Length: 288
Image (cartoon, rainbow, N blue to C red):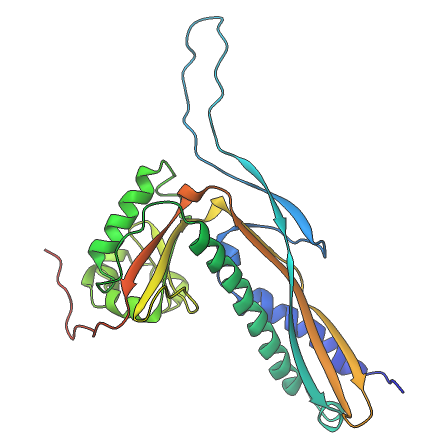
């Protein structure tokens, strides 16, 4: 025998899980070229490339088109699920704050999966030469070398769309460099959007990010990439709430979201291969 979940729970849960997902569920979708797939399992996203303006060869001659690299990227979206059982006695006595707790758990789980899909795509297809060999901790020298490689690949340098993902250990090492940590070097409007885990420095938005790929013990791959060259999509969370009777006597809450990501040009990303088992320095590295 089936029955209906309390109306308050159904309406509040669906609203709150999507509000949480859109607000803070994930960080990386906002850095890419993205759009709502509207429940489709395959979509196209147009992503920008690089190009060079040219002069007309001569009077009355055809003007050559620039090789912009603009691409229509087709994304195949994979469905991911975040399920949660709730006992019938608990559900029927829940208030709004209790519903928020369950919705937060699902939204954050889905958000982490969206970030994981994007990280996997970048790690797999980053085409520029990797900076570092995993033997040293992340450093200003390593970051500057990586930025130089990225800029030599003929992408815009200062449009605010370069992103660098660093794991907690690498972030800790970078915070020992005065150039990175001190507002005297990075500008008075930072830390970026008042979040300690996100800051902008040297034309790149840096994010402290969990879930980066570890190629070996004590090592990790950070990522530097140009956001507009990355296509990504994630739909709205669709909760399915069903009564599980019999011996279970609980409500099954199953949230589903479709996610996909694809790097349109491999030269728009590179990996930073650093060690994660190096102790922090107790004092600032002082700029020369």
